[in-house]
Amino acid sequence: MTYAFYLAAGAMLALALALLLVPIVRHGRRHGRSRGVFVLLLAIAIVVPLASVGLYALVGTPSTLGGVEPAKEMDVGEAITALRARLKEHPDDAQGWLLLGQTFTMLKQPADARDAFDGALKADPTNGAAMVGWAEADSLIRDDHRIEGRALDLLQAAVAANPQNQRALWLLGISQFQHEKYVEASATWKTLQPMLDPDSNVAHAVAEQIAQADKRAAAGAGK
Image 1 (cartoon, helix red, strand yellow):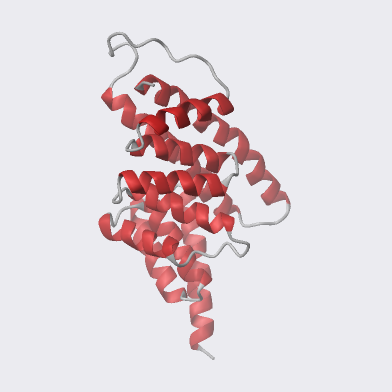
Image 2: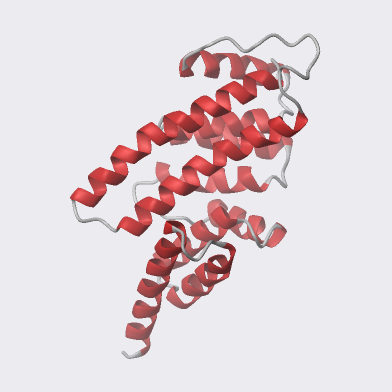
């Protein structure tokens, strides 16, 4: 297994995510759901695998790695099998576990995704992406989709380690909102807000969520 495999698999994952999530966003809009939430979901989901690809691009490409053959075309199932074989031999490969977790997330297999992110955390307990991935997968497994317990602890640790971890801030705000801590949710999202391009759809989506949190906080204070 080489970095070329990760590069090809990461690009494949990003494309698959785009094809998968765009129809979901459109369907949600047709049924009157908030545009902002779907836009933010789409942006976050696509940026993550591309960031992983960028990491390996910095290390090198097939043309710069002597003796590396071009990655063969493979479907997602074959890629997962190959990656699992790699991780069985190298369980300390945190980036490999991350890619596996992201792939299972795309395939809507949150239990497998959480296990993969857990593998990443065992390999690198301070890995912020694995912390966020585990928390997100755990919320998808739950019937109520609440973010609490270890998931909340991991998000708080991720933000403490990197106050500019945008996905961690977003999900932490969701957890606070779920627990009716609207003032805290608004504050968390307001911390995220300056990190975004103010003219971007993502920034507009965050602004919508802040407005909702502030409205509920004000309503609660008036009781």
